[in-house]
Image (cartoon, rainbow, N blue to C red; front, side, top):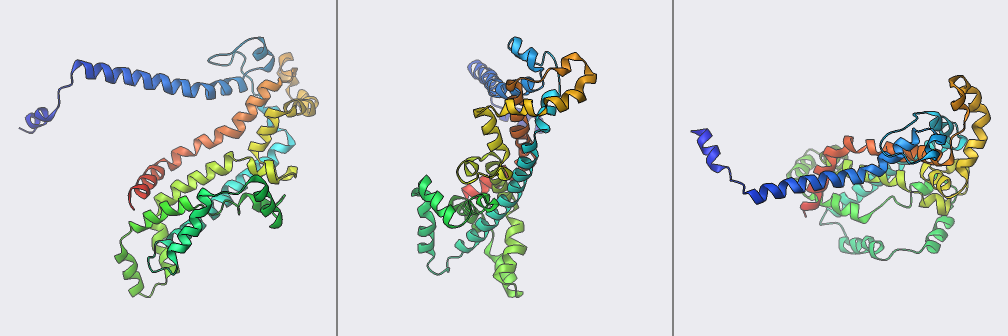
Length: 312
């Protein structure tokens, strides 16, 4: 009887619907392959011998597989320092930013907050009226943040749009939970850290992911406010390599040292890589690690964004 009811509820699909679905699936698969191919091309070129890559185009897989390109790149002195700065920035800046936004969102969620409308209007202003490059530089200089690691953390600590989404998420938490905690003698600070933050983990994880990606990919701070090489980030180092002869300097700097190491591998290993494959290897080292973070945040990312954006 149950099987008959299930069959009766199934809608019959017409031939045109089946054809449309199949064509749509094929189109989406082709579109996905087209979008993924540039990343694949960078990857195969980074693992290919430089002299062989100069002989002709490579389409689907390396003709002469080698790891020498990454050996040259990973021995570049500026890479280790840039990696440390980038990782430190991706840890400190997102945590500080999400904490500030979450505390601001909790405060704005209280209807009895004195001058709440004025505070919201004040915080909303920078969303529509931003400073110029010169004015921002002058502010950073006055705060003594030039060539300072804090320039990666403080300027982007608060984002009103993020606080609004977090406030919407907090508004969805039943007020009875807070009232019950207050009856037990809990303060607002205790309620925030013991109740609001644990219940807001999906929303926090979603914006934490945004902040980590933004910190990893940003090179504007280096371009405008940093001149010390010890504070270069990976993205700025990639910018220098792609826009200057930095890739040639990597080859010249380490060719003698690495040639001794790889001479046992054969005569072909003695040939230094070309600037093209060096650039591709650096792009892999700089950009590909961030691609592996998304699977760990996907569950929280979808739940946090949908819930926080629907509830008002």
